[in-house]
Length: 215
Length: 215
Image (cartoon, rainbow over all chains, first blue to last red; front, side, top):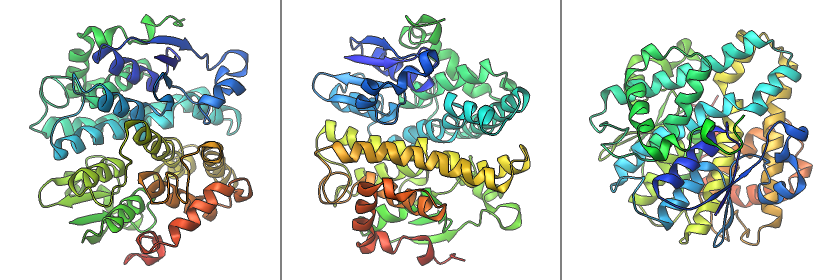
């Protein structure tokens, strides 16, 4: 398998974690989002990913798969062990809702193309852009903290004591929150789970600074 | 089942379609996003939905379920017929990737709280806000058009001739695209599929103007 990835892409980071947790072999194909006007816009890449977004997983059997959560669900169905989703529908909904709260309601507001639009089309200055980033990240992670702090299913990880799809999303988002100086003091549960994640090699070796294209 | 919904919420609209397609009985509990400073921020609602977002499905067995796609996956696992996902993992990934492209990369940029932030915190004027909305909607739907126009799995709907999770997301997004005067002429496949959707009562009766809280 080949993962079209960018070291700092939060969505690619999620898939790297899932591939590592499932002990699957894969090669990283770096797609530099900034160089040469953005390598994701190259016609050859758009054949694989019409949205010109990262990541894409190129799988011998499945062809080009896009959207990080769809890719992870595919891996879960194709390589069930170790499981990244619980057994029961109610618990699966809980885990998916955490993953989606991050993937839909935090990350898309903070990704590179949005930051660029704010700068280039709306002429928003650096400080106001940082405020925007922090705002959505903070609001979203505080919502997650509220859920995690009161749900009996939380263990060492978001669901029990082994990592799930939810944790594959939590760690990359926490990495961004730290980088943009969000107030982490109000996120004790999120932070504790992030620490548990990073103690696992599957998460640690998926981190941006451990990627072949890291700068 | 009770669906906490707002007539114009695109995410709630997806779940209304899925509930209708599966012929499940549910009551709509309207949550007005604008009245009284936003009913979604009421403490009682935040107990159900820590993110103060719409929708929430309150189910006798499962309790409060959040995030539209997690809710629909739950319905799919609990009430499998009619199926909203294909049988094979590769095709499930395809359907999910369309749903996620809309739910992650189009809709979150255009929802009410974001439009408000642009206005109130960044002082972006009406015309520039409309441009922002149209931009993300247009870019996202053109990516979808590119995929749909070249994928052999496309039939009357995004996958074959019966509606799936992908169509549950496509129709509400197309509704928004129309409302904001996106250029629909470059979206012939998306438009054709939307027409096929709206010809079904499950979609038509889920539309914003057919809701009890419609204005």
